[in-house]
Amino acid sequence: MADKVLIYSRFPKTMMARFAERFELLDTAGKPAREVFSADQLAGIRALLTAGGTPLGAEAMDLFPKLGAIVCYGTGYDGVDLKAAAARNIAVGHSPGANAASVADIAMILMLAVTRRILVADQYVRSGDWAASKQSSMMRPHAGMAGRRIGIYGMGEIGRKIAARCAAFEAEIGYCSRSKYNLPYQYFPALEALADWCSVLMVAVRAGTETQHVLNADILKRLGADGYVVNVSRGSVIDEKALVAALTDKSIAGAGLDVFEKEPHAPDALTALPNVVLTPHIGGHTVESHVAMQDCVLANLSAFFEGKPLPYGVKSP
Image (cartoon, rainbow, N blue to C red; front, side, top):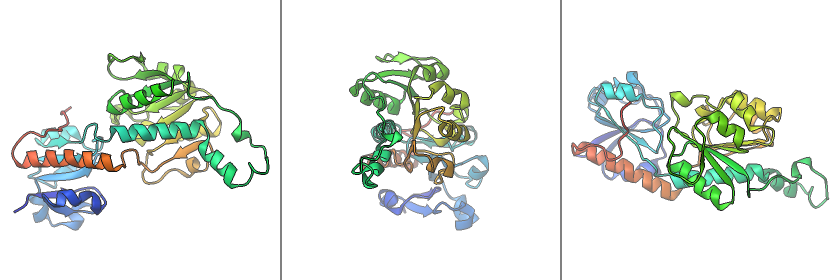
């Protein structure tokens, strides 16, 4: 009999196909587990699969008295209460670095699109304004990439790949991270100093309580009127109200966002702004990334049911 795995978050069935070949899946389709399955069914669950950003606290864990493993599909695990999991001897796993290249790519796309006004330029052509030689203030020249100062907040796998891509564009690179690494980039011990220095702030830090709204009005003000922010981390890292205000009054020049505070909804105030480029959390949404993430999930689940440590485990706090 195949081992049972509860699908705690909502995932497309195509993304679960490989897991269904190896395990018996109990899919909640994103609904509360007790609304879909009986208490007896939940009582036997030993492992569950979740999206890292889905809230999963102590009360939810208590629904599964035999739970021994929480496996996150993707790099993030910010929704999981790690202290509660550790108190219950529940192992937590994720897919470290599996989607790093794809997320770094979308960061570059967003940066180039917003700094070079690609969406505005596209509309300028489609509307016929270009053919009519109609003047547009949005089409005035903007600074290019060569020599631009790009600050990267978070120098993990994603941050490093962003840095390598930015270097190919002949940009200057600085970073702020919990640790200083042996890297050919300027290190800033504080986010404030990095924001003062750079003209594009790339957000690739791991989300958590310590980074909640860390990009506040003060940080945005430090970027200045010619500054841009690109977020491929989590929406919680930026104070969205402060960001809207900064974009509206042109305290900063623009933003490129792949993540939002309340997904899948982007605030109307953001969608109405011409100096913002928005994508629906597709940073890691490539074929290669999904295969790599699924490989990690399969390795973690297989190891758990074999009584072995998770090969891609998250360290307890």
